[in-house]
Amino acid sequence: MENQGLRYLLVDQYVTVADNLEADPGMCYNVTAPLDFISFEKEYEIARKVREIALVGRVIVFGGNGNTMEDLFQAEEVKQNRFIGISSVKSKSYERGYQCRHLGYGVDQNVQAPTILTNQGYSCTLIGKVADIVVNDNGLSISCVPTKEVIDLTIRETKAMTEGFVCTNVQETDLAGHSQSTKNYKEILEIADRGIGELISDLTSDDILVVMADHGNDPLIGHSRHTRECVPLLVYKEGVTGRNMGRRKSLSDVGASVCDFFNTKKPQNGESFLYDLLQRK
Image (cartoon, rainbow, N blue to C red):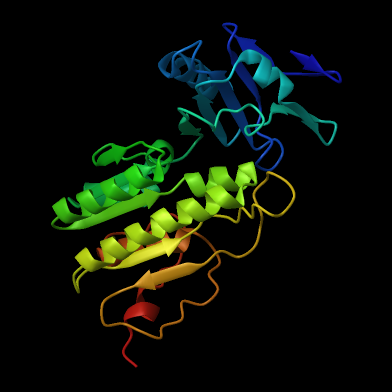
């Protein structure tokens, strides 16, 4: 397909392969399809082929029900006169039956926390979007999108785990930001907030809970892209108050802190903040 001299792919009549317009330009490719006309499994097969040859950081495959190819064509946008893509929101993919997987590029799983932990015999469970992004061959990965389901699974798996690590990603806040919907953002945050309250009531004095974001996504910013404000890092441990984790240099500090907590080797990047949390005043 072509617009203003820029081209993107249309595969098997229903699958578009184009730039991701919500991330930094040129960083990712989106593989988008209306799932009433092609199965998500078939779309995912096509995305895997894209992943084999594309050098971008991530290939994101998604679709929804109730939309058509005309909706996708109407969602074509060009940014900076260089990048052409299908606006995720305007494609109506989010509105009903949304499914999504993320395919990363060139990551050495052996220097990431899940592989380090499972190699040392610790349980590792990934839930939500993180299950699509991070390799967890020897652990449990559960891919899902609805926030209530994500939270319920997190509580269930935490209760079932004797010793180990659970990592959950609530994706619908990200989708609400891209949709620029304050109503959806509010509703999703309330679901997550109630779930976190229930989760805390199940934690013991041996447990640590980290609540954080990986980027901003202000629904009132006036565009559908990620925003770059500093994100919160909230850490809960029974009996610990008044600690300041400081302004961290990298999200990798969380993975480093997890490995520090379990006394395993360090991951490739990051500095642990465990000492700052547990030090005696």
